[in-house]
Length: 244
Image 1 (spheres, rainbow, N blue to C red):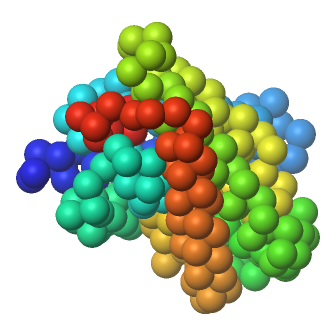
Image 2 (image 1 turned 180 degrees about the horizontal axis):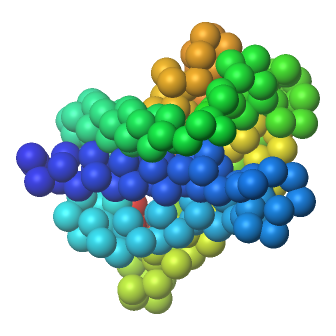
């Protein structure tokens, strides 16, 4: 179990550092219009690549959840035992927090780093209303996070099904997360992962922290719905407990 928890810590650390790091350090590098900036398209692919690479590197150890909503969804789908939920979630949140800390230390090394706690997406944080990149309402943000996370679980469970092509699951899951970000970055800056949201919110200021409840509740609800939906769609192998 210690090695499994270590893999979840490292995988979540990599997801938050890679995905949020691309947003903080490279999305708008040099200012608006600079061709060196990767923009939100680049950020979307960065999140997908973190899951793809993390799943190939660590999935065979822990299942490659890297996300409390995924762990809950796999439990609802009959793929993961309830007894391991709490430990996995603690490891994931700690991994996300450590990534947020490392990212803050790196970003602070630039004289141009000037975080604004009142700005949407500050330090890659998630938000609604005034903290939504597109100014979307709390209702729109909640619905978006629930639906996106539910579909993420459908992708994960389908890609790792015993009848799915062997060895390609991380690619489908990584591309699925990329697509989710392409859809929802303007709405919430895309969470679908409470550990990712928590990891940067604590460094982004009180605004992000006050809205953090939504980015726990909605993704977990979406994960549960997605897991139950896929469980209804077809029988599962009882020996499969991983996400990737």
